Amino acid sequence: MTTHIDVLPPREVPLGGPRAMRVRRTLPQRHRSLIGAWCFVDHYGRDDVDASGGMVLPAHPHTGLQTASWLFDGALEHRDSVGSLATVRPGELNLMTAGRGISHSEVSTPDTTVLHGAQLWIALPDDSRHVDPGFEHFAPDPVRGPGWEARVFIGSLLGASSPVTVHTPLLGAELMLATGKSLEIEVDESFEHGVLLDVGTVDVDGHDLKPSELAHVRAGRTTLTITAHDEARLLLLGGPPFGEAIVMWWNFIGRSHEEIEAYRREWQEQITADGSVVESGRAVSDGRFGVVDLDLAPIPAPILPHVRLKERR
Image 1 (cartoon, rainbow, N blue to C red):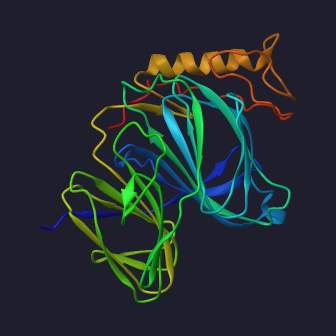
Image 2: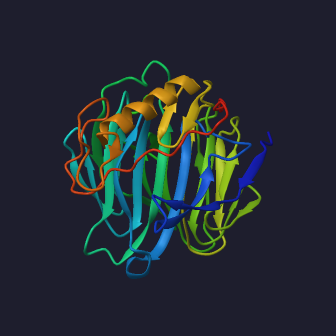
């Protein structure tokens, strides 16, 4: 059976402010918001930190999602309002569950000279989106075969499984292929899949993919064949079609415009003193999003658009 494949090009966006590093975003797009529960895909680097300034994301809030941080080069320090302090390193997963509300920061470490990785978000289903916030770290052991290597950080693939907590069936794995290697992978027929190419050039079942492009493969496949024209590294994401409408704006996922509006208001109330956003130091009050132990001013929320936020499906 032939299943249609769409190649989604990236768009370049700033991350975190006017001097922010640039990232290449492939999800969400106008015509595709999710692949399974994966709802946000940013690819960045290789960035010279001396030139770019690296990643400096002070405290900012999230609701209704999980963040999955995956690096190829460099290191990031993660702090959050449930007290987690962890370093994100290449080949290791930092998975943060926002649930009903969390705030966190990510800052490249002083010894990082090159920063290169992916930031991924996972939408939580309605029956899990108000769970308590939390954090998990997992370093998957590599699995290898002739001309390929894989690290499975979420779900199961190629005989390897990840123990981290997810709230819908999900797959996340890094694959490295030698030049000329063609790998046929058994996949769950109920899953749709995304192939994000980091470096190299590959063919995904007859469709050429360039770095930072995301191939979307609709559900219905039992195998997926990826061929490397030259040495390649990619992320394979997957899950059954999400099946719920979400409203996603800035760092929040909810189910209505009013819910997002309330999250924004609560965050602004936490980071203001006498009606003004704090200019240095941590949030001035506790609340839904907690307080991050970091001496950097938290990021204020943008102004909501003057139109009703639309559902994404």
